[in-house]
Length: 140
Image 1 (tube, rainbow, N blue to C red):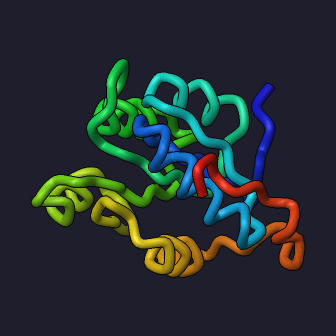
Image 2 (cartoon, rainbow, N blue to C red):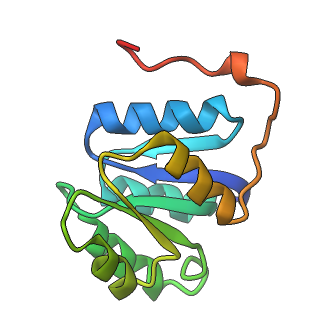
Image 3 (cartoon, rainbow, N blue to C red):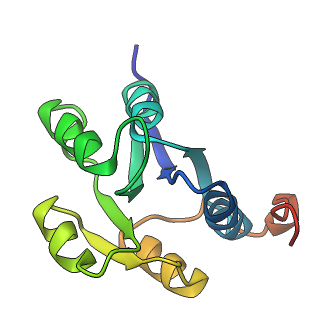
């Protein structure tokens, strides 16, 4: 049975430091975030929880972001979930357009741009005013 996590963000990033930092920034603002390290994990989560938005790195082990997106688009129940592409490559705009992404962010991701893009996607923080609940990433 598939649950609908209407205001949940799925963050797919293989670099643990970048993943932890982005998740922390989003949680600090009150967003509900599930963070995973590759496309295969992301596919399992998206089929189980159906997030409202996916932040998707492209170059990852196991299953990269391109393959994840192909599989997402093959499932009519998942195809409508918007993605924001995260990439360190020089042609991030072209890659994002090829994948039908709603937006793209160049890595390393600037926290203010991340929040602006997520907000522009129509996502609303689940728990405004609960910033104290968010834990800082290790080493922060």
